[in-house]
Length: 255
Ligand code: G
Ligand code: G
Ligand code: NA
Ligand code: MN
Picture (cartoon, helix red, strand yellow):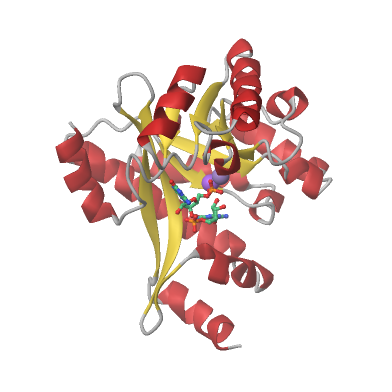
């Protein structure tokens, strides 16, 4: 269809841009990182979310190209923050199952950092907890382990929507889990959600794995996930995903 015809051109024209959403520590509120989220700045349709085009792009075989482009923009941003005097611990980039089929992925990411003379800990990689189940793929697991061995922090995204298992945390060498938004939305009102989130936080904490609560929208939700012991928070209550230029303003106000 029309979108797929336009996608290749969109990549060349740099219409695929990264937005950035901050994560803050639950205790002190200081910035712990930013997640890079892709958007298509379409000339006539406006800002398109990944749900509208990412699957099509991957079916067209563009997963690796888009991934490299997002990594570039994420590293540009991290360097931009540093240059502006903001010590942002890391920027997180999402990797889908399609991207986790590239056996050279760990090397490519290492080269990208080496070319810029950046430390490995400025980058975190988000993979969905279900990636290894979904694809039933020993290769994806091997690639994630390569990445962890190279020193990159692995974050398990949408945690709790799969098996929420200790096995996945260990098998995928996770440094952090991201408790899915579906457990956070309304957590201050619903005992079932808080019981499940509590179990996830306890499990992760006992393993020395960090916990990021996703989709924190209200002050009440924020208070609840903080009381449960989540280490970091992400969501509209902190800030919406924004263009790089706006992150500088946000960081200045947040200091
Ligand atoms: O930003 P938004 O909520 O619309 O993101 C929707 C989904 O798209 C999320 O699950 C997110 O992980 C995924 N996503 C966003 N940016 C990227 C990206 O650059 N690469 C990949 N593979 N997935 C992304
Ligand atoms: O799967 P992943 O966690 O990467 O998805 C992130 C998506 O969630 C992004 O599309 C982002 O725009 C969206 N998002 C971020 N914070 C919130 C929030 O507080 N509420 C809702 N509804 N969506 C959010
Ligand atoms: Na994500
Ligand atoms: Mn998620």
